Length: 470
Image (cartoon, rainbow, N blue to C red; front, side, top):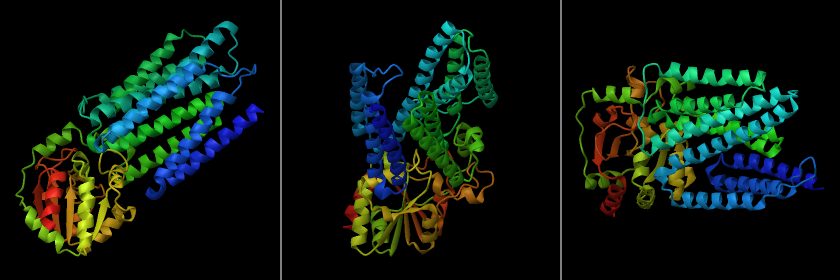
């Protein structure tokens, strides 16, 4: 009876994952989708704890350890999520994703030790090869996800810089081939000493580190999405090992969603995944090239002039970027939007798919400030609106509005679809300084005749601008 109820719990969990994922595709239902999936996960976890029985009919037991871990992890996760700033959200996503990869790798380690102990005592290796294949898949993918996510976390919060050396791609490939080669060897010879298993583990961790180290900041949203898909696949391997349907379903959904999102992000940048992983766009070489370019002449605009131009415009488009997140200016931006609309100005937001440091970063940021979802225009929609726009206000965005992507074949971002802000009548760019963006590329937009620079912290500039308009 308990097993039948447990099967029902797993079915409910699987269905809620699918429904929740579907709801996440729409900003208006995303929050509830998250809650639906979380409820399904809760049902699956509690069902496993209280209803699971092994072949001998014994329940799990060890409730103190299980609930102790759940409580401690729940407290840490809740406090971390409540305290994290929106600017640090990409780091938090990388950190939590890395923990998922670590869990998948630990499952493989535990199951290998169980299997190896059994094989040493029984000497019967029948059927061990398939299990070992799944164990090694979970170990390698989970370890790469964990190590890569930790490096991504450290790079996003500025603890480490991009790093590469001349033969790094060959070195990375050698690490991966060695890890897979040893895995094949152990799978074919299950009774070899267990330390060979840990050699594979170390090689996978090293590959994860050197895999992410050279990738530049402009590509981090793609890398985060890719690592997320790795964690899903690794979790699915754990579900296969335990014959756990809900774990398998959840892992497959995360892996598939992460893979599709990675493909969409690459498409938005007009680059192949191979080019992202090997090209190291946004790394040190790019920064050096940008630094050698002669700067042009730019013009500044005062707050009072900006207030006049925006107050008498018919349509204003706001382009948010990472600078908006750094300044925590999303609420001031929403206040400016409401103030302009009260004066009869049409205000919309142009969202580039790779703006910020993670997929959907700007959407999450503006949703926190209660900006209406229908005002957030995707790149294709926004580009259709720019020719009829009087004023574009760019808040901390750089590479996603750089015309070099269309005009300069020598630019590292050449061919990447951008927001066509230069089609508007007036372009006002808010930046702290004239330094290049995170990718280290000079932006020719800043030197065009219709572009004016409004320097300063985004939050203070917007608050002062609101005062001038009033």
